[in-house]
Length: 178
Image (tube, rainbow, N blue to C red; front, top):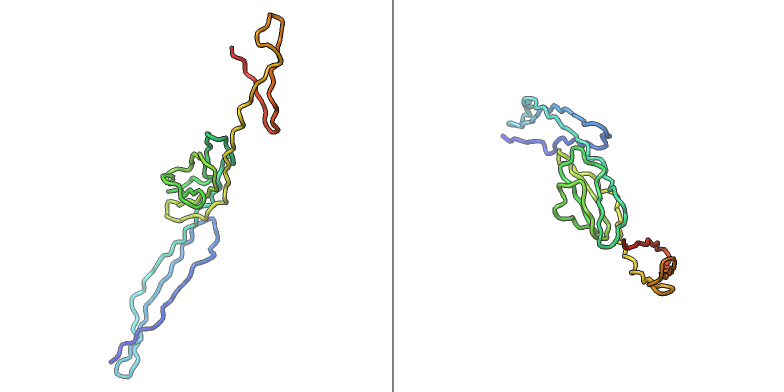
C-alpha cells in the first residue's frame, strides 16, 4: 500500500495583539492522517497535543534624556528613560554600537555625534530604536586680552579701567586675585 501525508500544515500567525499585557493563547491540535491502503482511505487520529503560546510585549520605546551640547574638553551624561526589567542597552553613535555600554542605562559623552538607543528586556525582546539625539561639542571662546586705560600701579584712592574687546555671544566674568 501507499502512505500519503498531507502536503500542507496548519499555521496561525499572531499579529496586532495590542499592548499593555501578555497574551496567552492555547491551541489543541489533534493530528489526523489519511492513509491509502490497497485502494481504501482510512483516517487515523492521534492523541491531542496542547500548545500554549505566550506573546510578550516589547519594551517601551526608549527616550534619550540629557542635554544636547557641552563645552570642548568637557562631557555630559545621557540616560535611558526605560530602565525597568531591562537586561541590556544598545547605545550607538553615528550608527556604530558604543563598546562596553550594554550594561549601563547612562553613558558619558565626550564627543559630538548622533546618538540612538534600543533596549533588550529580561525576556530577550528588543525595543524599537529611539529617536536620534544630536550632541554638539561647543568650541571654547578665544582667551580675552585685557587692556588697561592707565598705569597698573597707582596710589590709594586712584583707579584704572580694565577692558576686553567684546565678542558677540560671549559673557564675561571678572575675577580679582585675592
